[in-house]
Amino acid sequence: MTVILVNLGGVILVAFIVWWFWMTKAKAQRAGTSTIDILVDGGTFTPSRIEVAAGKEVALRFFRKDASPCAERVVFDELGINVELPIDQHKDVLITTPGAGEFSFTCQMQMYRGSLVAK
Ligand SMILES: [Cu+2]
Image (cartoon, rainbow, N blue to C red):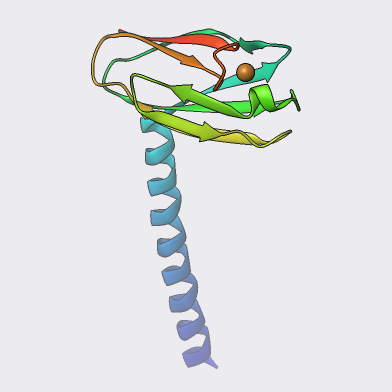
């Protein structure tokens, strides 16, 4: 009986350690990357002017409500990013700016317009 209890204790301890390390790692990853929500609707990105820290990875979380083909893609021309946005879903676009500066982003027809300001 004692042997079983000791073994069970060991298993629980190992499970706890594994869980602890995974949790800590996940937190560290989230802390390193900030997330900014952007709504895509009615011909405008909201917000349309986004300030980020230069050279640091940022996740832009687009939420496209506009079902028209106009809002189908988001394009960061200077950064070489062109991503399809699914309707009524969150889409994360990870961006690391090459340095300080202003980088525009648009829909593929350049009707939607926004700018990413890296400082
Ligand atoms: Cu468009």
